[in-house]
Image 1 (cartoon, one colour):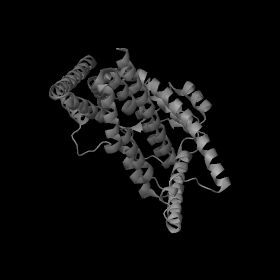
Image 2 (image 1 turned 90 degrees about the horizontal axis):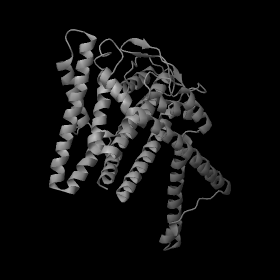
Image 3 (image 1 turned 180 degrees about the vertical axis):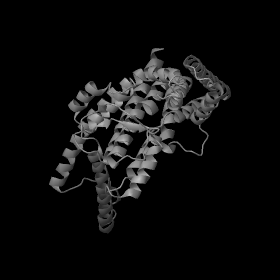
Image 4 (image 1 turned 60 degrees about the vertical axis):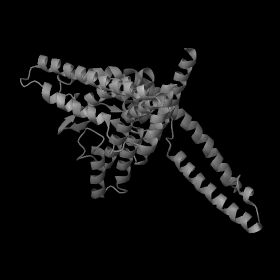
Length: 386
């Protein structure tokens, strides 16, 4: 039960705080450690065997130090009290997941996008916002290219930054969760296919592929389930909206409680109807923004395109997202001034629009909630079995 409480605390903290830059962050410390060890271990004489050996030593050193410090912190906190230990576990879990941060950064791109294609200043701002969350070159991207890149990032990081840490937290607590984040951080820093990192970063890249193999596939199926739930809710609420518009009335359950006089009765009724209409408009907007899913199309694209990537895992979630939204993702991209040719994912059924970034985030949050609830129920069941 300690782990279940910690997961609830961590997810709640992320929903409230996101990823505040003013607070100390263990993932940034891990990044600084990787950078320091990379400078110490990178061989001066470029030989691929030495680079492979030094890269493997980097991985082992980072994992050992990360695990040792985490175990020590938990030992000290639980030595004081159980409540302090559970709270520390929740805080460490909070630092490992990033749904709120992913939403905030991708929505900054969405808000910066120009309403018209000719607004160059807004386009430059959108490219600058996008450059904070992607590794590709953004200087020449069009409006549609920016949207595709933002949607790809949200789709890919739904696994890497949200559901995979949840899975490892449920399996092995904060220690395993932070070890996973250390592997993920090493891959993002040195796991590139270029002349500098091809051999030195190979161990980190291969280990990251291994660690994400099951989480990415589980996340893809949960995204499909989220899409199915969203489609059902969309049909249900749309039917309710049409019925309300036909009958020209809104039900309010609370205005009769304050019926002290005729004037106060009418005033309370008008206020309640106004609030109800505002809530209904907001709910309707969310339902309209939620992907107008075609589950058959999403399954088809997933089965067809889930391997259309050099990484064995990235296309898993991207293919589901592309199928759900009905747009085309991936394709050729520029990294460090060099064009990398990649296969496309999905069908080009329509031109991407800024609302697709919102839809991708809704899909991400729905998947995160399903994963969290499923893992928490599994942990509770394990406690009762034991």
